[in-house]
Image (cartoon, rainbow, N blue to C red):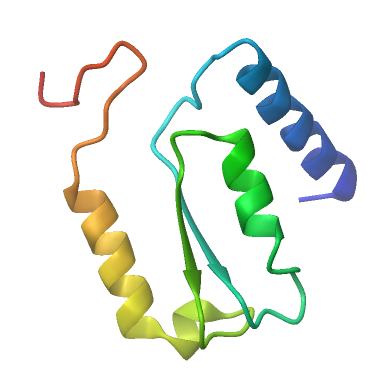
Length: 95
């Protein structure tokens, strides 16, 4: 994603938060505290813009968490996919 595209994305998240419009889908954020490319504070900042997002920060992974910690990332993703998430009207996909 180009920097301007990322800036537009962040602007849209901020706009949605300001009018209490939920993010249109469940979101799992996985960040690494040891990432040399993305500052560790980025995850919590992004999660603050998306109140319903689930944030997980890994302690022993670099920028490629799926390579450094495949079992941990896989468990997080599978758990996330296995968990019902409420939609904008408070319903789950099964309802």
